[in-house]
Length: 513
Ligand code: ATP
Image (tube, rainbow, N blue to C red; front, side, top):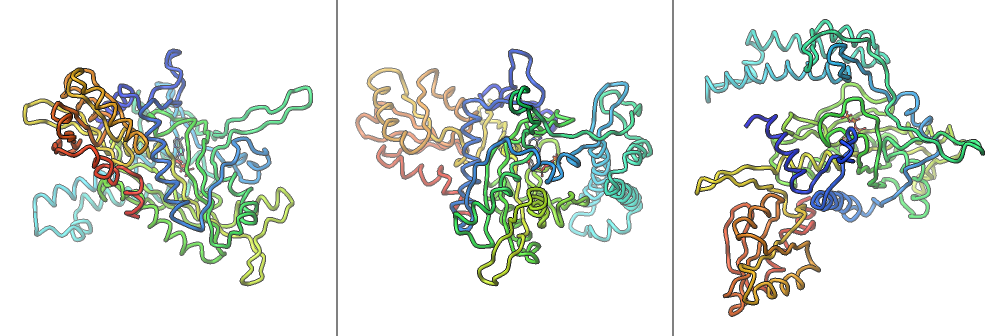
């Protein structure tokens, strides 16, 4: 199936099975804003729990925080967001569609990479075991030609982005590379302009002089302005971290990829405060730790890669993204940034308050350096859904749609079904559910044939189904069906909790870290 079709199917599956709905749908929706339905909210909560526990429970030097969305507006001046949180935008005059100029160019670079990868794959197939990839890459004329073009473009682009960015040069690159609008197919581009991504609103009534405030575009600043409160009240010693989950808002220019790029989204951020000079060592450690967290979900190591940043943000001295192979290519899910002491120094300057850390071991005062790990809940959600969505051909010729979600993240862990709606089976099923509902999210289902009920549970990723039949009343055993293998086994009711529990609890994931 073409990857584009997979993505379309995924979007409609999310809606049909109560994972994600367009916001305000009966009013035709609101651009790039989405609501999570009955299954979506469970999956989202499980993702958050997995992240939170891996940070706060597994590290005794990391604690949590829940700061407000509204903050003093000077914070955003200090952080650089008022002046520099911009994207370069460009419009196509024919389609009237708006794009990020940097993204158009990065896509073009990716196209060269794809061409090279295709040549390599073709040759690998042709030469089999005798294939020497390194030699091929350094001698094949077509590969060298693509590589030279790619490198030249990359250098020119990086230079333009680092020069402000140089908006005229970005436009010129788009023209020189003959990049066309995917909708109109034309090169009829406007100038490139800067666009600030922060939403603002008014706080207080106008009579007493209202104040312009921003909806936070990241949760990180709430951590920075509280770091000393937490350090002192929690008696934290450097190195230590503060973790926070919360909403963030960005007036994104291009918002067309479902929940990949939203205007209201949720972040899970952890700021780790370290001694100056040790930050790059910690940066390396957090890169490894975070990648392990992703890989523990079991989608396969080939689904992940690091993408080191060429253009560093104004605050960073090293940065990388963890990318996941989505149906539309490798895309950023998490950013790991070495933010230096930029934010804390800026807040010290703008607030006029001393927010230095006193190190009891060296008797020194200093401004800590910060390593940030920042991941979008919604993007993580999308990566998990796309990694899990499967259409399987069955032996009887039918197709089943199954979400192979990591069991610990599945919205419903166990579906409990009486074989028929009579003979005391519903009562028995309810009784089993009443015992298990304290341990996991269970769903009771008695409608339609067993086959149909299994399909419904497959479609929402329920790892186990329990069927209560007439024999259950005599033997006290039920049929336990596994979502992925579809294998069925007889299990005594009083063993269900221990059989399932180990496999579906977040702890099973945490133990892999
Ligand atoms: P991008 O380059 O895709 O715009 P970014 O580099 O600006 O992302 P960060 O500022 O590093 O993103 O934010 C950290 C994380 O927050 C991202 O890795 C992503 O998972 C999430 N995120 C950022 N913007 C959005 C958005 N508009 N919608 C959903 N998630 C987002």
